[in-house]
Image (tube, rainbow, N blue to C red; front, side, top):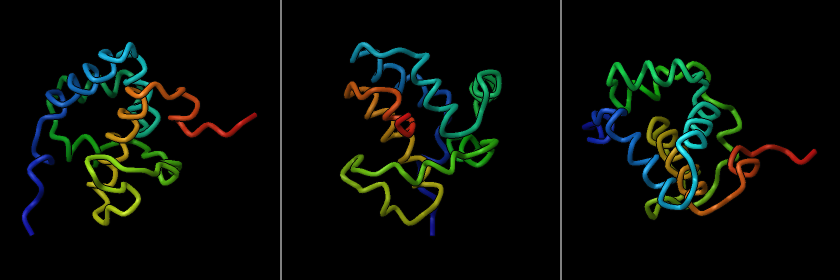
Length: 119
C-alpha cells in the first residue's frame, strides 16, 4: 500500500500552519510548541532542531523521543475522522496532533488539551 502523501511533507512547512491557525484565534506559538512538546517528547531545542533539519512529517513523528502515552486519551473528530478509530499508528499520531491544535484554536484550556488530571 502506498504511503499517504502527508508523510512526505516537510514538517517545517506544516508547523507555521499550526501556528497561524492558533494565532488567528488569539492563541500563541508558545502554546503550539507546548502541545507539540507534550505529545512528542521533544524539548524546545529538539523541536527547533527538527524544524531546522526540515525533516518530513513521518520522520518528525517517528523520531519523537517519547510519544506521550496519554495521547490515547485524545478523542474526537478531526477532518471528519474519529482519531481513536484511525488504524494506522503513524496517521493516528498525526491526527492526535491535528486534534490538539484544533482544540487550542477553539479556545480550550491548556490543562484540558494536555489531558492534565484534576488536582
